[in-house]
Image 1 (cartoon, rainbow, N blue to C red):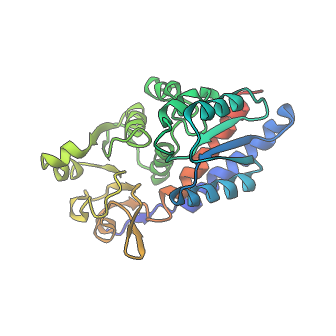
Image 2 (image 1 turned 90 degrees about the vertical axis):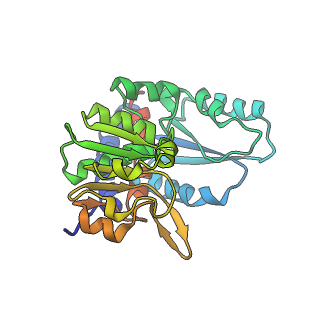
Image 3 (image 1 turned 135 degrees about the vertical axis):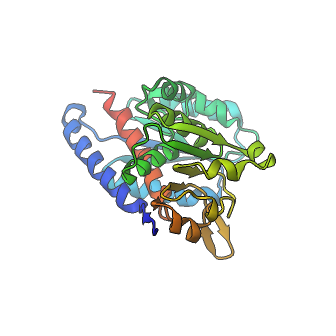
Length: 285
């Protein structure tokens, strides 16, 4: 079997086309276009690519975008004040805190201060809670991207064995809830699964497999079930190459669909961020 590539750029473009249509249909009742403000504390090279992608995607969609950069030495109270000011600014529809932040800043506190209806990343506890209830409109961007890629594969999740490797708050945990809401039989694997030597056993059962760990070659291609849908969220630098968590070549011979790395989940993630911005903007109608 040779897997069909789930190319993120093409999927992202299809979603952007729908977002443009939504913006066009709602704009007359709101008067102004959506606006996203990104807050960056200090400078971090690892976030530079994501920032550039945000700027480019927002511009393409006609979404206003502003980057607020705070000094690396800023204290928590001053950072809190900026978030509160953005909450109270009626021209700002959505806010994203760029991670990582300096050690003196409590990122969870700042994210919790962002109004749920302006939470561009979908990480506010209220928005996470809505995923559990199955009533969300705004959700963590990478988890939403994974669901969009799975949907594009054409697989019917009802009753399927889904395995999520990694239980982070931004991907693994919310994605598991989304899969459960789609009635997939969902297993979450994490560091303790690997320490017990049970990771391969779980992966081999997966009809839908998502790995979001950030460890190259963690998922052996031989473990992938014939016909599985494989979503590789991992971004790892190995020499001069960027690779995922999954041994791609062998996995692609066994899977029905697989995401490339790079070019799979990443382009869809920033598009889902903009989808959240549009959803926040639409609430103001």
